[in-house]
Image 1 (cartoon, rainbow, N blue to C red):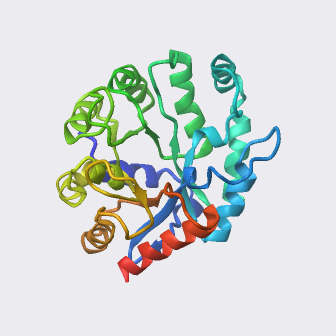
Image 2: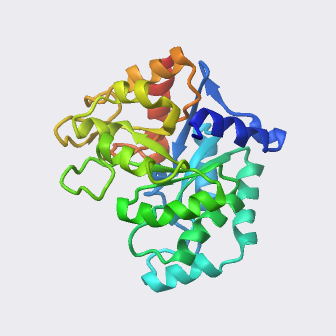
Amino acid sequence: MLTRRAFTTLALSTLAWPRLLAQTTSGVRLGVQTYSFRALPRPAGGDMVDVLVQAMTECGVRECELWSPQIEPAKVPREELRTWRVETPLDHFKGIRRKFDSAKIRIRAFNYSFNDSFTDPEIARGFEIARALGADFITASSTLSAAKRVAPFADKRKMVVAMHNHSNLNVPNESATPESFAAARALSKYFKVNLDIGHFTAANYDAVAYIRQHHDSIMNLHIKDRGRDQGPNLPWGEGQTPMREVMRLLKETKWPIPAYLEYEYKGTGTPVEEVKKGLEYMRQALA
């Protein structure tokens, strides 16, 4: 069985040395899910690449999980988006990687959420795009039915897909429970976990206990704050998510699980300002 630790060792051994340099606080790798910057203005007719690089530079972030809609055409018909994904030359995505590399920001994960509308060529292309971007693995908010179709592609490409959870317990086809994570992981040795501790808390599960039990299968965490019982997204430290406890657990155990902040509540400042607040909260928890 391919554990997350074994995968990490294998992935790092194949990377050029400049990309091995990761920014850590107390030994914990901190980064951001670029969805956090979704409200920043998008250039007319363009993508969000330059905007994201500037925002992360201002925040002092050196590692990210790149949300696919930010590098894809905005508000186009579904079939047009599918064509763009399948037919855009891979050199385009290698160019995006060069922009991030030039800013000394690593795209460690590519968030490409397979769903039941994806064609086989569209699924296959996600792995090719991820490789071109320099990502180590894909994260996906996927249905279990879609995951069954993705599994053979992950096996063939030998690339990890980390399933991301939400909190809706009324849709068995979505990842929300420990059991749904287990069902997905059973489909392929390359299926792992991208644990969103805020959503996990809102669904009334214990993130600390889950991490302790399944740390070898967790590729990265999404750090956000929510209340239990499907509570709303809240500013850092105002909800019931064990954010500090999770950060301290990573520090104490030295498990190589990156913690990626995801700004999702309605803040009073700009996305950059709110992300800075969140990163500072995470650093204080590790102090």
